[in-house]
Image (cartoon, rainbow, N blue to C red):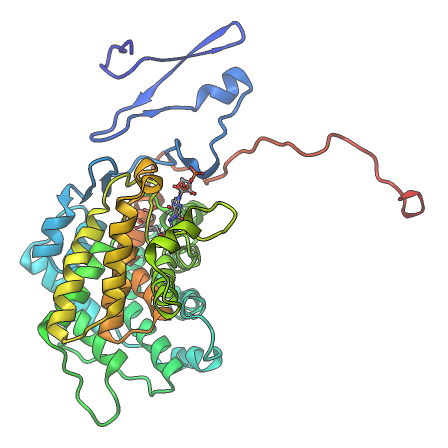
Length: 435
Ligand code: SDX
């Protein structure tokens, strides 16, 4: 491919008799981007790319994924190292600020978070008016939206101090909100955060501690939870993050932008897949279906059966997060003394799929959702809570991406075009003339 002076591919578009040379935005890693700005003005044409398979909506400095070789880095740091050596709040600061914090910076952030985990009695009313059978993601989105009403001093997206406060309040109150959703569904009292406990310890205690009892979990429980939150923390321009950025592009506040991300994440093709995987494995077990037989259903296009937890828009190799979760799952179940036949079924399903041409040809591998539910279940969470747990992990990524979008100097309000294929001009037909 001929190179332009800057060493990037030269891009020329021939439209009718016209030659249009398009600029290329250099990537530090991965795909460079053709700058489409002059296309409409110069040619009267627009680009059409349903699902954005070939379209970058933005430049970003936050997360890099190479789907061909299974690379995931947050601000340049490999996910494997962060999962092994970091903490969730440290990763949150890294994603949001762009650099690893010093010990003092991390301690100051942890102290601010610890101070704001509390939810007022007025706020807690929300959980009593939502039906117990409401899906937790519906309540989660509603509660986050309500934060815009309870914390008006933190709404202005163009005021850095308000953005800083909203960031802390959102990170601090998310575990409390999610624990309250679970407690409400269980019919148990809502507990208060305890100063001095770690983020994951507070969350686990507020979620699982029963009246009159202490909640003590082994270190492997907290380590697994911290690791899962780190693994979910960001993933570049996925469906929910793109939703958060698009809503933020209208200068909507952080809470209402994040609530939009929760809505997108709830879909079974996205964050809802972890719950769908567990339901799928349970279906296979309860109906005593041979995984090979199940794969026949999956490959039969007349069914709408998908192998949940498999496939990915970007990863055409093993999702590096899934590889870490798979190891963690075995370790956690052993340490907790939990024997879960669904894990054995998951192993068998993976093995059958990875040796089946249908999956090999389409480069379909386990993604982050395939094994996570096994761990959450061993911890005591019901499947309906798996996607809120995904949201808890993804929150720092949503916040970092929203903040990047809000300060983007090139940032215009996101407003995609369309190719109209509906009827041409026609006149209104009075009712009596209609057939
Ligand atoms: C997440 O984007 C992100 O980064 C998301 C995420 C994040 O961290 O934010 O990684 C989290 O959402 C992970 C994905 C969770 N979803 C699932 O596990 C649901 C099952 N997976 C699929 O529905 C699917 O793989 C998607 C939605 C994940 C990706 O869909 P694409 O990229 O649009 O791919 P596609 O639907 O066009 O599939 C290409 C082919 C099709 O077959 P053909 O038309 O070529 O014959 O692969 C087939 C699909 O039918 N296929 C599957 C399949 N996934 C794709 N067939 C069976 N089972 C599957 N899971």
